[in-house]
Length: 194
Image (cartoon, rainbow, N blue to C red; front, top):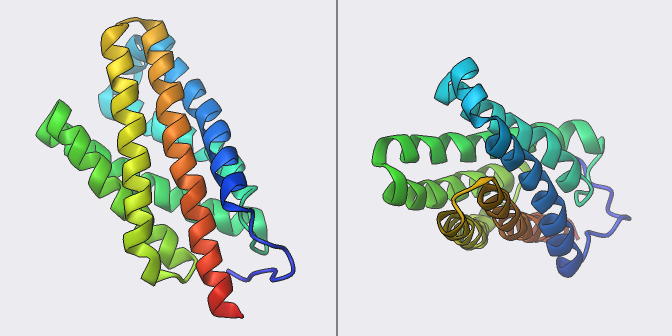
């Protein structure tokens, strides 16, 4: 990816805010399809097909949000491909852990391994492999907080509203972490370019 060094990387605070709000809205939309269409999707697409559609919805909708934080040329095509690989790798790791290990352990292992995989893809894509450990930590903490707080809300309110709350909380926290990770990986790339 080529960089426009004259365009500054968004500040950490701005990256976190845009990531949190933008991914929060995206997650709410995706979780709305779960809340209102899960049974139909399972009947029509099967469990695996439904999860694949949800992962693709996350990629398509959130790519627009996170692309706005990235300074690359051409911005949309390169970042969108990188984002698709990063999120789909995360989703594949998460789903594998969830379906093999079950609810609690699978969700935890999926959050951990998925976050590491996403960090590796983003760091490699931005040429910043030294930041993998830091990115992994940020993504895992944000992901786990959002997921497990959201899941607790859903467990407390087992309803469509509970699923929407789950989606909003997951999106806010994980989006903040992704925004922070994008800031960090670009900052690291810019420092090496100077």
